[in-house]
Length: 201
Length: 385
Image 1: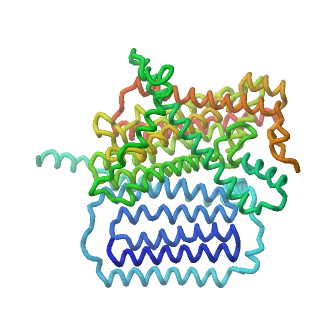
Image 2: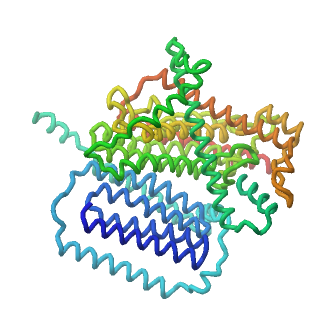
Image 3: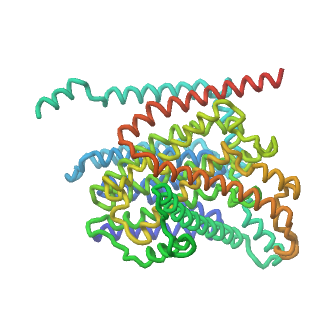
């Protein structure tokens, strides 16, 4: 590992220790667990950006997804937490890795203007969402909301109740199916291509 | 509340305000993890011995015979050997990921073990979403396998891990969908409650017999579970005869044995899920008899103001042992079935694996769910009218 890498990981570890100590002192056990998960989320995403190898970046996302699942658990929403692990870690991350491994590595230098443009775009998005959240959420009240119990049943009822989200839910499912079929159609090799390949050899 | 935390509550009641709350919490978590790890090692050791004996007898030989009676100590000897073996890390491997991968795989399966009920009243954690939790955690092992394959930096391991990723993503769908059928009948994802719902008909009211779509769903589950646990005829990620040892090629010693512990623990958990959601779980005529004789009391150790050990409910203990033993026997019968299939069927090709998963198993599982839902709805309408 080179010097900058050491400094980066040292800083991440320091921040993790600091947040852990602060969380424990301020809020006891719950604070410590929150600090752990928050560190996993933030540290995982920071390392994902930092690592030069794409596969390593993808593995760093385990921390991000797992930490998010932990935060859901802390909020009392166990169904969301387990869906997060099942879908993101078990499914989407496996597919990302699959895609990354099939792609030849791009070892060229990253262009500064493109990096800057990306940073500006992401920063603007994050700032917009943060401003929205800060403007709408009533923090004092949010701290007093009781933990939701048996959220799973409510989610199920809400998805299947005619008055609530059943149409949106079914529409989303149809859109996903259409997208999947379309992706298969686009990715499929035509018979003509196969004949060409066979003929040239 | 888990069994250990109930035990520690009793301990705290005995010791008064001497023990702080966070120590209890941490202690119960640590004890549970230790028990789960011990259980996984025991299951792995017994299953390795069983696999060698089953393989031997199917091929008309004895298998291990020298270390202990019929070689029952062979696994312990092998475990000592694996502990003492040199821990090799290839020079060109990605060291961090290479060391992380076996730990991730084992951690995921230890986490999944948390939802396994040892007995109706002896649990690590009474999770309402138990089934979902087990499937979610065991899907995490895929990432560990892919990590191992990539970090080893060898073509065999990469092939193995690519196959694993493709295979597991494909078979997670029929696995989950076929399990929806018993979940619909049970109305719960909690393993303990699903098992308790099958206690009628002298302990033979298994979900298997409650709906005509249950048998095809069980067969689909069996095939998908074989693919999920990468057992033959779906052992393409390891494929000894073509990929050396697949994703484990570069591993040795204790790290290698972590992968084996994961494989056997995953087999055990899948068999346990099948036993609970299709084959009655804790319930059998024997459990019914024990329940009639000793009562179905759930609390074994009294958690009163006196010291925790003083009030043991012996009748409840016998009932718990019979019920837990029933589930254990059913799970190991599932493992035996998997081994039997391994030494009977040849391995299938990766394109056949994909074709079967996407083109046949997934639509069939969806048809099963639809049929079972219609049957349940019709049956409930009949009951109401």
